[in-house]
Image (cartoon, rainbow, N blue to C red):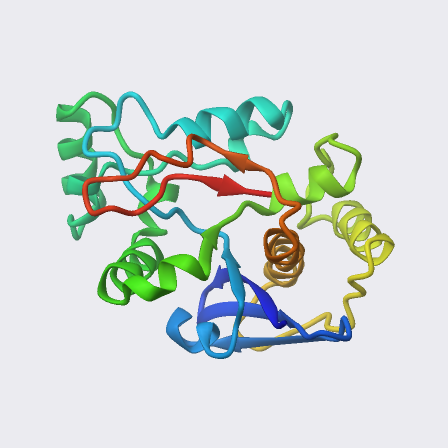
Length: 224
């Protein structure tokens, strides 16, 4: 059984694959479709499923923030589906604000990756049983006994804290640098790879009702 975790990076996706023997293979791929080949489960740090209006937000997001006191801001607000089609931040913000709440620039920067995942799962429905939404900070919190890791992962202390947690749970990071990716992208991909393993083993936790789907039939859950 091969599972993997994927985290977006500036040149595509950092993908951490884990084989049956627990060996990790970490690399950068251009598209998420390439990451799906040969996998039982892929956990991806990107929203799956979008509400049609921004309020109320997806239930899984609200639940995730409650589980991450002091780190709730790491759960970015997912845009509503109409805003996802906008090509400029000004346009997306105006549309979203007209529907109830504005949209920040940080979320808008993730639009290309969100569209990629959305199109992949809508165009290839069979992948909906393989690709799951995950969140690295929830994964790290689970590894940390349910307590959020409050140190910043882009700082030396935060990087070391998370690397130690991964090693403690059998996921030793042997890669420090990858062309086109930041060090924290690598950590996040490994963290959600563990989530993929937990999903495959039937041990993962799920946020949001499993029977709730968006207008295109995609689930709106976060796994950890």
